[in-house]
Length: 76
Image (tube, rainbow, N blue to C red; front, side, top):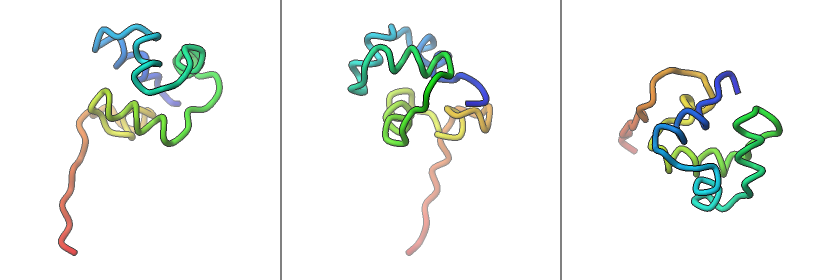
């Protein structure tokens, strides 16, 4: 990840690494590794983190500094 926004958001919400791991159903070691940019976070885990923090995927992976999700409606 370009920036480690997982750690930033976890701290902003006041969650411990253990609490966050339990919330998304992964090991404590996974959270530690992601925060140290060791290993890769699966797409489904990234989406779970986005849901917990209420942020966009682009923000979480460091592609933008904007936290907000861009919800777009499309007429089908």
